[in-house]
Amino acid sequence: MEIILIVFTLLLIIFSILDIKTKSIPSILLTATIILLAFVKFENFQWAFIFGLFGYLLWEFSEAEEIEFGTADIKVMIMIGFFVPNVVIMLTLVGIFAVCQLFYIYLIKKYTDLEEIPFIPFFLGLWIGGLFGGIF
Image (tube, rainbow, N blue to C red; front, top):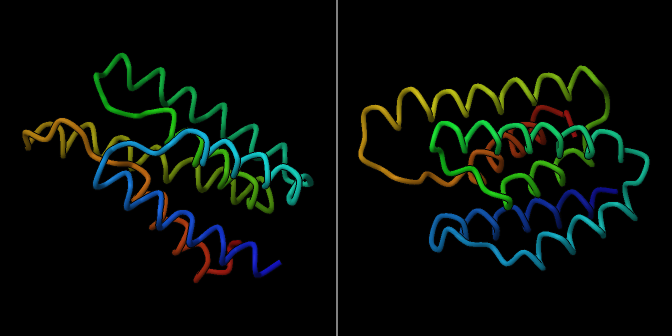
């Protein structure tokens, strides 16, 4: 099981670099990763589904607030959902995602002229923190 964590961490690093440099990640890579995780981590499918719904709600909210939260971010949230062990961790991570979103809205967007800030590196930071914290 540890090999899955290592491979997924490497994929998140690659996705983060692509998000920072090009603000674009090929959808085929994200979708293929979700499909592979669905086969390998099917026992956590419900958490991936809930994270996907939460990602969709964030996307809808971001449309109204003119924030750049894209489908790649939703797909990465689904991927992280496959590793969530229980409801307490899921709610904690959802809260952290919401705080990151609010931080972006009220501080970064208000006080800078940046149009877009990649969210996948935020997810990578949460993922690495979760690995070191023993969550995943």
